[in-house]
Image (cartoon, rainbow, N blue to C red):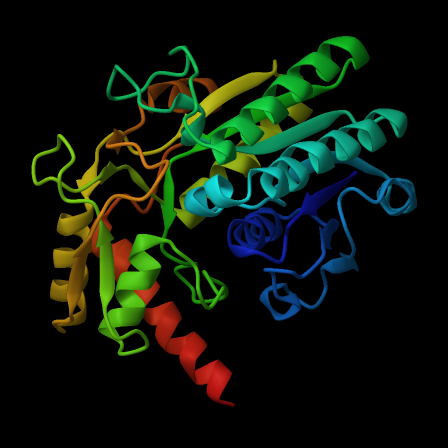
Length: 330
């Protein structure tokens, strides 16, 4: 049995590949168009197919050639403000192309799908920490595009008999503790990446969008989950499905939040460097706070995080940015 990882040359997908490989999975196939991913982020023995997840002929051929039984679907666009500016582009990338992938999966008899979703499906939650059964009300096209994909997967599973796990991410951060991969997109908008780049002098300043939210210091509150812990959640989800487990929708977070200004102070302290911070107006589509209720994934999958430490997450991000800078100078 083989696993197809779409978007597997990207940030989270490449960590999933490592999690599978570290656990002894012999055949892992990555499908990535390399628009934001990097072929060098993958171990050399992992098969890379360069192409689009909506190319049904390519997907079908790949599934049949490698006898794939499960798909971990990471390929997507993820920047909330960009989704507000380009909603049709996000519905194409995240919804239309996911539909094409699901259709190819159904036609080829795929048994299991693990889907990369988002806490953005909750919108501005009235209950914090956010449980999985809270009414869903996304406030931006990114969240809506992912929610529509959740619906399609659930409906198709009922009609065609495959099983799935939908994982709703909170804010992903950090890098592989062994330094094998990390967030490598130059202009990524992730707060911890941007802050570590600024600490290392790669950006002139860090911009904080909104200091008038109804939070303890006026900046947004977020639940930061370390990327290797998130990848491990996907791996145990695959084991759960292959063992005959039921379909599930689960939050992926630690259950507590840090404000933007608090994260910046941690980056300054861990790096030992001060840097310029500019306060700017709110961005469209950003909720004030989003923190996971994260007990269900522990009870359902037996998942237990190993890297729940913001200082450690920041140190990993700093080490990766330093290594990436040396790589880019070669």
